[in-house]
Length: 363
Image (tube, rainbow, N blue to C red; front, side, top):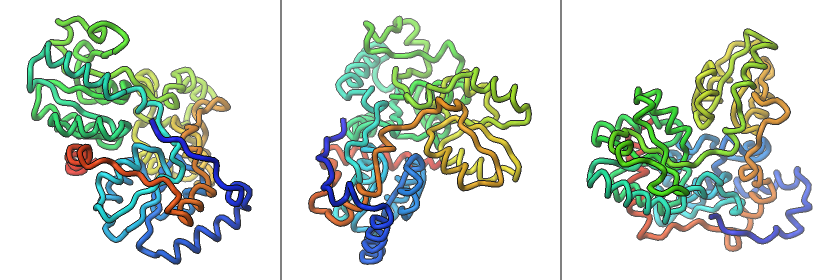
């Protein structure tokens, strides 16, 4: 769970947007290369415009790891992303989360105690060194440490394919958490038969998996999901194709299998950005991902028509949306009062191992 944060002082809450922009720009000019502002693709347009770098969780982790001159890193994203930045940077570098109430419901679906319990149960049935954990980036630092300690690695939607290959080159089976849909879609892409993919549900005895099925499984999934991407349904795609047979559909791999199967293209947030950028002028594209990214693509690429796949019901990530210019300005002007993200050393070592393996395999 992310920490709670007091209401911003009135000076920031009531400030004019133009004033906030000028103050942020002044702080950036003052600190120069000592400051690095990282913004995730799902942030508000005005926040992205103030950032030094924009990207998905993989890209931003890589940037943080390769920015030794940045003494201060202001992260406009969610809690687990800022944790990853702190894990991958040097002790003299300070990482701040612009709005520390920005958490991730998916990450909260995998409490460490429940994952440990499941892991011990799986080990008791399969035996030691038969299965390796793969932790999606959307997990807490302690689960990243658990993953590194048990020989596994972190992945994002950008490199889940490579993570699966890495795992199967070394182990018989893999335990993927917390997003079941990314895991299922990646397993299918990798060629794992459906009958060898099982879902571990901690609400049921033994995870709801019979011992024989667990022994035959190649991929063990966790019962988590992204509330944004599971809002997209196959009928959304059918409706768009009825309206315009030439439309292209691109979706995120956290969507359910039936949506992924019907789409023209599937990929991470960075993939979706590139897809929209490289589409020829006049293209009509319906996108199945977070609303802020779709809006930014639509206003940036006016030579194309880019729509929300779910139409008026297209979901927004409320946690990503929490970060405002006021939050960023307060963080930059008051680092002594802002929330610094510090991962304890005893967690950082193994978590760093898992994250470095992620960076080594690339996208």
